[in-house]
Image (cartoon, rainbow, N blue to C red):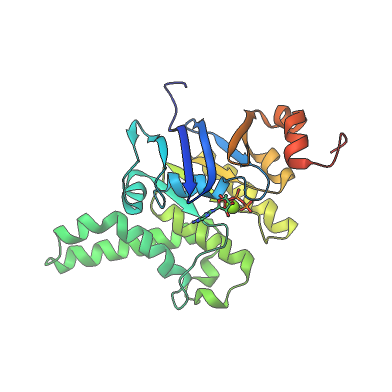
Length: 258
Ligand SMILES: Nc1ncnc2c1ncn2[C@@H]1O[C@H](COP(=O)(O)OP(=O)(O)OP(=O)(O)O)[C@@H](O)[C@H]1O
Ligand SMILES: [Mg+2]
């Protein structure tokens, strides 16, 4: 494995009771890249994201982020270290507005500052104002500003995917894990999402992306890894992976012309 990786997954195995969801998977994500992760249903993609985000612990192996092991850390530590994620099935908080979703993330960043000036109301107010401006700038960036004060449960699904992304970005991540960001979106929304992801990469955020839409993932990713039945099948540039007979057999499974 190269020295310049941001994330290294080293011989990771994850077993749930009798079921081995991941078996000795090794891969790396380099800084500044968009890395795709594909594979048939049940291949272990979401499980790998859960391990990287410290929502699950590996049964064996190591996960190294910015040179330190993540194994044994709680999810909030992974977030503090710079790992943010969105979920395959969008997870938002009903009753909270779009703006509040982003403020939650920003507050986490500013917590130490808030505690330090708890009794100094002028500074506190200034911090609040700054956070609000920052949240509004982020919403504007994602074309969500018109819905800032709207409770999330009233929004259509396409916008919820963006709210989730806004919340993830609010923690100013180094690594963004996107679990099927195109799922449930129409073609226009998918294109907009792809543009957004490219823009984030251009700003220096590294993206690790699970996606079933081949056009989307092959168009976005600099490099693609393929999981099948919990094992890493192959890895490489999108064009190469697409043509790999093992991928055609395991994932596309539609015969030689797939
Ligand atoms: N918490 C869990 N407890 C038990 N089994 C689990 C758990 N999470 C995942 N699994 C199992 O692990 C395997 C991999 O699931 P995972 O959700 O990682 O697949 P995936 O590649 O994300 O699939 P999909 O494309 O359908 O989202 C599946 O057999 C799944 O049933
Ligand atoms: Mg999944």
